[in-house]
Image 1 (cartoon, one colour):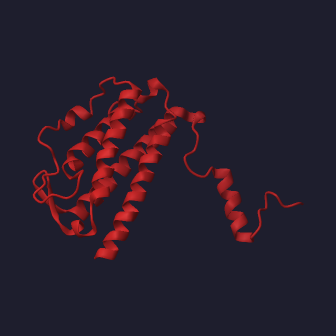
Image 2 (image 1 turned 90 degrees about the vertical axis):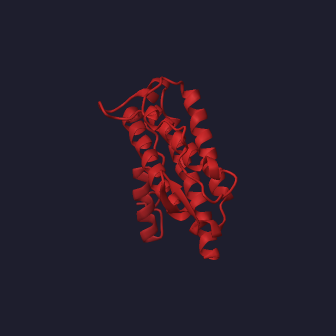
Length: 189
């Protein structure tokens, strides 16, 4: 398990830092007023998504920030989850600090985990999980919300959106070049 555990934690660290960077790429494109924009009556703004992610990260991973501790309850009693979904009209600067603080807590916890910790038990809202299961739960949760941020920012920016991956026209040319062994865009007629 040690080699597999090491490989898993190494991959997790890299991937989650990539998820964080993706979210930052979306947030960077928002104008100040767009942080509080929603796409529908029950929609979440970027501000709300940032507040929720940060609250979850602090609650779930704060006790593990310096390494695994047996008997950890990964849901702090002082968390007010419902308040995370209320747009408190915080400034983009305040929201950025919450974003960074939340991710610092989560990534510090992951950085301090060891392969042997993955099979250990912690509880979330009284429900037992292996550390591995808790991590997988959060990977899905955090990635889902970051993709919501990307969708929201892309929709709000419209034509002003700058892609966070390979632009479509470039992707088609790259695929064609890979298939033929040459870059057809630069070939002479």
